[in-house]
Image (cartoon, each protein chain N blue to C red):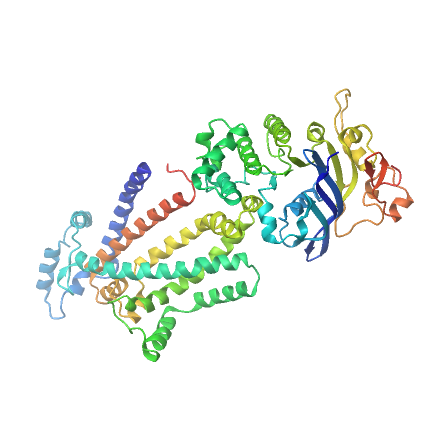
Length: 305
Length: 320
């Protein structure tokens, strides 16, 4: 286990190196950074001074190594919009993003596991058809529509939950449901099909032949096996959520990464974009490693080396 | 002979498919005495596995037991509620399957899966269940049981896994054990060991055994009596000696004729021509007549009944 972890951590290094190149190039492929930073009234002389100050007159590889050196010290440059170092601004948004991501995953898991199991064990029943229909609907509803509908109902009509912002736990409910519904729909369908496959396995027949009660057959013998493919989807979804979810965050004025990144892109605040892309990439890698560890916990056949 | 442990009467198990009803088991009757080993033989698809699953109450939809009676120690299993039947399974009535490689759950340890039987039927706590599991593993000849109990199925060989399955099936000392082709998936040397073990345990615990197989060598080795099935019906039933010495039904004769003999030197083995009839399109008359070398006009028109052709020897043939 320890060896496996060490290996995974070492594997992060080349990936992060590649990401650093992409992040570095980002600034150049999106336009001339100097023109962006200068005001309309700036003279050519001002321009020369700025180029020299930013080191943009240096050869590309020198610029990259300087960028890399700074990056390794946590310095992604200064945000000209906030006039502050970029990384702390990005990190400040992380708790809000995590909070929403975790809440959405909890909503998705709590809804999808029981529904997926029920749907599979009562295959072709009214309940199964209803759940399948609801999953299609859940997946088809766009976030902006669902979010606004939830606001209209719970905040405007019934006045039971706040419209937007972040604060106490009740601020979290509507955005978490807006995000979690689509994921729940996808996971429900996946758990259903995975469960159906597992319920046909020989070892399920063995479990029944031992006279075990059906609850143990389903929740112990079948569920653990059918969760293995579900973990993949959960990991992918978590990665997406870590990147922030632009629409949901915008609707609910949730101060997360998605909102920050879109604002930074709009104002071409490249230091923030670079820092945010890097942080998100890092967290995606970490969530994939966690998924890998989870596989190994669920399935003893997967070895650590 | 002692009173019968198991009595199966006119069992009918049908599968409803889109193309029609498949009568996989069609009026099968037989009995097993205490401590007796009954072999059920037949080709793939003759209904022998479905018969055993019907006894266990494990026929999965679209299959359904639609008629007959199954009496185990004076209780009609088909009249029991699901819950009552479940309490018998793994307890009085247990089963081992053909595929030891896939019959154990890959994500739980041997001890966990074996211990479940004790926890379910004997209300033991985890510690007691584990101790009993180790004991049971030792009983079925697993060396190093203390260690194996904490292993996962993928860490064991096929033979070992089948021993674990046997330990699991015998954990609660059942009155009846159904072994559905227990050695088919194993190497020949391991087969012999597993059969030896089943024989030993059968004697030791006086367990009635239904051995389902298509291997006549296994039948000769293990069985006291034999039921031969063809297309969902019993075609012959006799004690093992009479059956091998004087088979009455042409199908049984064909099965025995297809075996190689030690005192003969020949290039090719005999086989039964044709194949098992399509269950949705059964021939009229005797189900075996299209493949029977001795078939007459009568066989094509009338269906023979199972009748006593010698003492305790039944056959479903006009000319037996």
